[in-house]
Each structure stands twice: as C-alpha cells, then as structure tokens.
Image: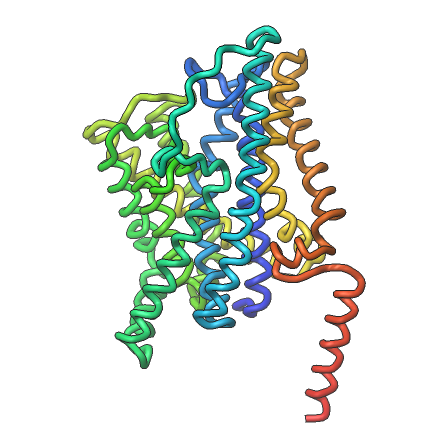
Length: 412
C-alpha cells in the first residue's frame, strides 16, 4: 500500500533533519580519532580507534543524502511557486542565511582555534603564521559550504528547467524520462548507475585520499570536482525523484536490503583501507578502483535505505519530529564553534572518551535547541529560516484559515 504525498513529506522531512543532526555527532567525534597526523583542530587525550567510525561511516552518505532530499524539495518548491517564486524563496532561505551567518560563525571558529593553540602551547600564544591574501581559491566557507553549493545547484536548476521547458513544452520527453527512471529504479541497476559519476571523479582526482571519501568543499569558491559531481548527481536525482511515488515505495519496501548492501560495502571498504585515518593517495590499481566503486555505491545504498526507513517509520505527522526537523537548520548553522570549544575545553580532562563525546553532544544540542526555542521559532528569524512562524498567534491564524477553508468546502 503506497503512502500519500503528505505522509511522504513528513517522512522525508524527518530524514533531512536527521542528515543535518548527524553532522553534530560526526564533528563531535573528530577530536577523539587517533591519528599520526592532525585530523582536527584539537586532539583529545582519551582517543579511541572506535571513534574513527563516527566519522568514516556517516561521511559516506550524510551529505549525499542531504543533497538528494534538497533536490526533491527544490522541485516541490518549483511546482508550488514557479520560477520567480522559487528563486526568491531559495535566495531568502538559503543564500541569505549564508551571507548573514558566515562571518560571525567564522569569527567564533577562529577564536576557538586561537584558544586551542594557546592551550596546546602551555598558555602562551604561539607565533601566528603569516596569513595568505584572501582569494577565490582559499575563501573559508567553513561548515556552511553546503549553503553555497546549494545556491549553485539552484541557479543551475533554474537555468536547466527553463531550457527544458522551451525544448519540451508539452512535457512528453520529461514524462518518458520519468517512466525510464521508475523502470530502472525497480532493478538493482539504479544505485549502480548513480554511483558511476562519483567513482570516476574519485579516480580522476590527483591525490585523492580514499579514507576521507568526498573532499569537503569548505575552502574556495570553486568547489572541487568530486564534491560537485557527487552532490550534483544527488541533487539532480532528488529533483527527478519528486513525483516518483513508485520509486519511493520501492525504497520504503526494500530499505532493509539497501541497508544490508551498504553495510557490507562499508565493511569491504574498511578491509581495503583500514580503520585508521590515512593520507595514502589512491593509485590506478585494481584495489583503488574497487574501493572507489564500493565507496560510491555504499553512499547511494545508505541514502536509499534511510529514505525508505524514514518513509516506513515516520510517515505520520508528529509535532515532536516537526520541531526537530525545523530546529535542525539552526542547530547545524551554529553547532560547529560550540562543538570545537567544548572539545578544546575537555581535551586534557581525565575522563572516558565516550563520556566526553556524549557530554559534547548533549551540551551542544541543549544550547542550540534552547536558543532556537527562545530566539528563533516564534520570531521573524524562524519565519525566515523555516518558511513559517510558530507561536500561539500564528497557530491561531492557521487554525482560523483551516476552519474557513473547511467551511467553504462544506458549503460548496
């Protein structure tokens, strides 16, 4: 039995929030990863090999999953608002937050880095390295890079959609393409085909460090080819996925199979490359090709599994899940400076690593959810970020509007 469009939106919105919140847990564990080289701004005295998994596994799929869902909801917004409305809405809710929050977020991160350097140097400020001139190649986008990449994808989507509308005004080609995608989606070929672009991008990148997967495009205004290819494929597929009710139902029914394959591929990847972080670049060997293929395919299988699981478990409306999904945007924007500060504070405290890790996550979520509830949700900031304002007055207006519509329907 297929789920209704509204129920699908509830499930997918919950998964989108999960993808963002997973970033908090990923970053919180990075100071605990044992390594022969720096992987983060600080290194905790109580590191453990198991923490490598808190980075390695989510990094395979987390942002790919996010961009798939971003593409899905982008097409939904396009259909609701049209080209101009879509452009304005995406500018307001994606690019404007990047412009508004980038600088204060960067300053907080820099402050924590300086504090960490002073603490590591015995309480004295080390000699500061010479800052290179700011260029398009080294522009520090920080963890808000995903908003920048989304903005690029939105511009591309608008341009491509307008051109396609001119070429195929009746929509016949698009309908045929949708049927083809749905047909392929019922076979194991879909994730295999979708994994090819990222695999080729991996293996055609000079000095690709396989353990770290898709290189994070957080530095420079020109995203690296791997991130652009992998996440661009995800966004494009998400756009196509909107309206593919049959394909979504396939994910819902067989999420467990996708999850099993994803886990098996992840185990295979770790057997090939090891649990410890490595800066060994990929070569042209058969093993490197096998690793790139397995890593890419695992990302898609994990994504389909979590989409299907979200549809299976979270199809019904839940105020609690709605709240968390709305809050996840604010949480992600501000979590990183707080996570870093807590890591620097606790890095030399004698305490079990897992306890510190849980404490960092708990404090970060408490502060970000608390500020969201008090400063954002019922204010103009909430309306800006979430697309609607919550609160007693807003809810009363929504209820009155719903009652009016119901009365009009009854009298029709």
